[in-house]
Length: 363
Ligand code: OGA
Ligand code: ZN
Image (cartoon, rainbow, N blue to C red; front, side):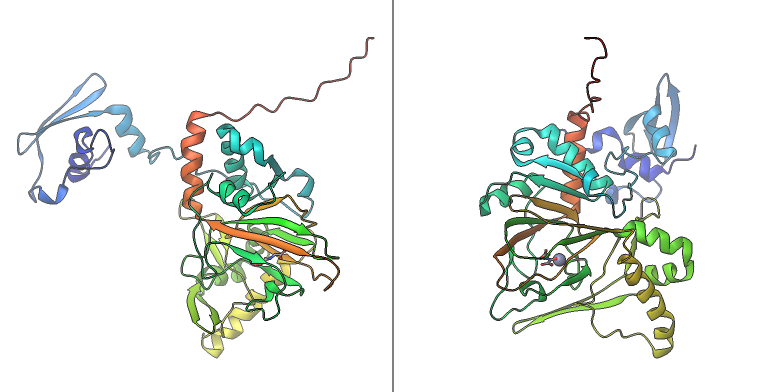
């Protein structure tokens, strides 16, 4: 196995502060020709005496792990389970009281978020505080250009299509932001309107199908930088995003940025439009195919929590004046979710799924 001298010296066990676990050693201060003057194997360790006389000891299993690329063995790097239009009955469900009281249930919830990208929290309190306490289980609420939270209700002068009774096409929220929000919470406080069913799609399933069926389109959507823009009287937020995002850990499709409401005028050359539009249109059409589309009614007291980079969501139109409808939303970062998962899963193993009791044949 080959190991670089700077890497070895930088990662000596003495490099870290024992209480904060932060690196306090400064590799920048070492001489350019840092090298080992002697090195030997001692049972389970490699000992090195460095050119400045410092001595380091390395556990051989630890070295082997890094050599193999196993790194820290990140619990949060998991294989995504794609789902389809019939997912509603299988969707992971948790009770508010349960996750508030049991960290083991939070670990299970976080695992469902990593694997499936969506979960339903039931029996929510009918209060602003309920949403806040729920999302603080994953992290700090991260503001967006709509503030810390947002209320989806129809308004007299809406600044946003969501605040009307019109249908919302499948989209991910706020791709006009440089770091589009990660995990989205939508807490249904009231839903007495006629219509307004929720639409959810696992866009990784659709993107994987696009990759198989139209590999050229897939490649285009992972490469083109698409402009998004959100404007109000006092805001002009713009950025560019790739429609399909790939996971740098394993090259898998990790998510999408897709919103026709917030798409700006595409600024590629007109020849590139000939290449881009067919790919964009095919992918957008496939998102709407019924095989991928989970349609359901979100009820008062439920909070749907989903990965805003992976799950496209929308709603059907509802009848104006037919009844009140109010969803309150907020976001946390995906990094917060992964952090919570690493810490909790290391402490609590997954709750055992017990098989339902078989009725006894003998009476
Ligand atoms: C939104 C949104 C869903 C709904 O406001 O961005 O997706 O059901 N709302 O109103
Ligand atoms: Zn939305």
